[in-house]
Image 1 (cartoon, one colour):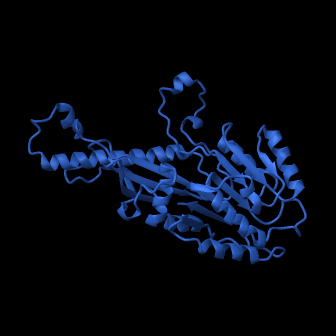
Image 2 (image 1 turned 90 degrees about the vertical axis):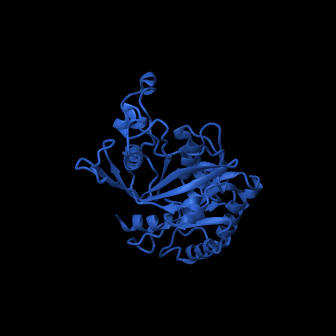
Image 3 (image 1 turned 90 degrees about the horizontal axis):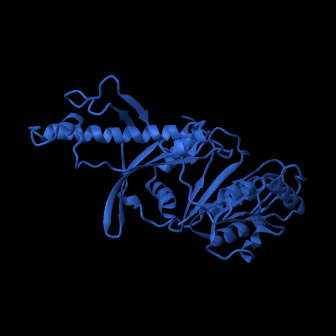
Amino acid sequence: MGAADTVTKAYMKENTVFADAFNYLLYRGRAVVDPTQLQELDTTEIALPFGAQDEDGKPQEDAVQKYRDVLKSAVIKEDGEAAYILLGIENQTDIHYAMPVRNAVYDALQYGRQVADIAKKHRREDASSKAHSRGEYLSGFYKDDRLTPVITLVLHFGANEWNGPLSLHEMMNVKNRELLRFVQDYLAAHLPHPKLCIDATCGNGGDTAFLCRLVGPEGRVLGFDIQPEAIASTRARLEKQGLTAELICDSHANLLQYVRPGTADIVMFNFGWLPGADHSVFSTADSSIPALEAALAALRTGGVLSAILYSGRVIGTDEKQSILGWLRALPLEKYTVLVCDFANWADTAPLPCLVLKK
């Protein structure tokens, strides 16, 4: 495991961070998963042919062993009813082009483990098999037995946009929908469909195009940049890709003049300078921090702010350090902040930061 993977794994194991991630994924920011109720579980997954254990309950030689990053049990209480679920997180620095299969294997191993554990319990507690059917006796899993749901979340912390498959069907060279109806799909990601996204620093339009694809035809994307050449470059990129966005040549500090507070799903910042342009023109903390404050006000509960920070010989470290200080001062009861500091990269490497609004 690389240094970046080790850091993100340790961070995501924190119960508050772990709960925030699933509250955003499952409940659009509502505090349903209680971090105080999370229980750490063994991340070793052992797959068995159902019932393939010896008399002591130990796995036989044909067992398959895998290791998750993080696995916790949770109690979900909705409408006065409690449900038990298992929640897992996989941290990815590099793009895994077979992630749907990997997720399917992990979850299948967990379900297999549950079946084996239930069968083992029955063997210990049931002195006689007479009260059970032949099928129940052979499988060890009885008609009234039930499994605990398993949900796996993949978090991609890499520098490049994820371009791998998000479902098992995407990995198949079959386009016949009638046939695919009978092939079980498996998603690597369940993405809430955002309705309003903001690229607060258009640059050459890479993030703007990404947000346009994310919202789809029903969503709205706003792109800000104070440099006319950046707006022109972004417009050309979008037109080439058949995408549309509302492009605004204005300071991102003024974004609340264009959107209502509490309505944005995502706001993205990529500070520094415009690639390919005059590097003596770059963002500074004087305008960047007011823009970040406006972005937080624009976000809905459960919304996400992302910011890439830069430092170097030309732009120095003032903006980066000022923003980091601002991020660390955000109250924990309102925001969860993730700073992805790469342990074995240069100090001037781009620094990704994420803020989840609670």
